[in-house]
Amino acid sequence: MDGIPITLSPYDPQWAVLFEQERISLGAALARWLAGPVEHIGSTSVPGLAAKPIIDMMAPVRSLSEAAAAIDVVTALGYRNGVHRPEEAHYFFKPATDNWWERNFHLHLTEPTSLLWRRRVVFRDALRCRADYRSRYEQLKRDLAHAHGADLMAYARNKDDFVNEVLGVRDRTQAPTVSYPRRP
Image (cartoon, rainbow, N blue to C red; front, side):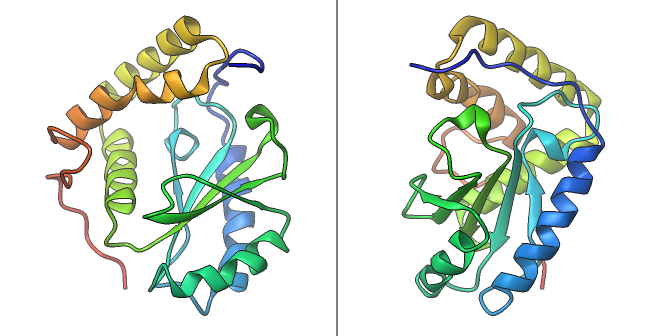
């Protein structure tokens, strides 16, 4: 795959600040579709964890089909609409560049009952709560970055077994066994 090699940055508390600024903007723009607050997910949401410095976010929408009307609203905020799990989410990235390593934000609009929502939030929470998971995950990410160079798809795909272990699932279609309280 073309591009620059995958590199991880040490945890930066500024990531939480950047998320909060973006959350406020997105929350106001998406209010009519939201079923709850925009969540910070992914490695940048886990204090102490090295990560690619891209702020991953999910916004819980009441209806994925109704949220299609939000695409123009999100793109007006500087995001580009992309394709990632279109059956479960509307996906965006910012800035609107074809080069993943130049992106600062990823956003998924998805229903809070979706498998995507449950897996991402439960995985984030598990990493926040357990230092052993954080250290194992960081080492795995470093090993995969070294092994796969610039191949982001191979890097991401090869994290699945660990993610499934943390979630206590046998395959990607099974819901996590960890309970997570629903937000209003």
